[in-house]
Length: 287
Image (cartoon, rainbow, N blue to C red):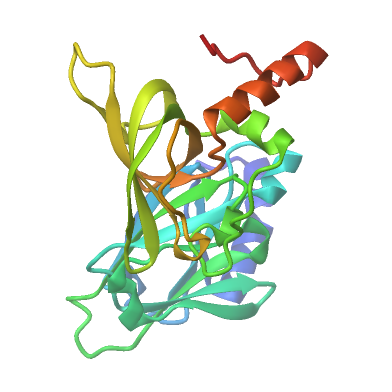
């Protein structure tokens, strides 16, 4: 039962919801809902709050619209520099997906384009995700579903776009990447393949410092070698190179994306110079 004080606090919010036709769901990492609950209430707009670094959304039989607010679970000035990446599932359909910033909508994904599963990234400051159902006679076959991740890397929202930067990392970025990136590994390039929307670099790893998920696979208990594939934007025109490199980068939806990748000898020189000055952000075992 509501206490009088709690009721007085909730009443303005409830009145606001009735005026703006909105409903609210609790904070969580993933959300699953059904448009059947909107039946007869096509003007309802449900506010969904997802406060995790990654999660998923699944909207069955979409009708009306929902607004998805993606936020980190901690308050920090660094949160303003985060980007959001979403990856629609292969069966996603039934809606158009927009970015909503102060009531102004920008189309992100059309209904017919979602099944392609292309990753879309944008700055967290660009607004919430507004998902609007496309009218259909039969909604029983319609499901809108996607995974999302909050990312904080040097590529940011351009990581999967045609405008992704390809310039080499600065010395500061390089040293910081070793301390903060999802994977750090020493190894060589074995093959470079040009795929439809990105390049795939096959690498062999001789020293694995860190990996967030198992993107590099071990050759066996007695073999201290790992292999894997690292993706890069197609326009970076990555080429095969001899010698050893230090590979760093981020993991997006289970796939490794290249960040800084200096030649290992160049990294060693930079690291030891910073070590002598006492400016290394973290320790790396280089032996």
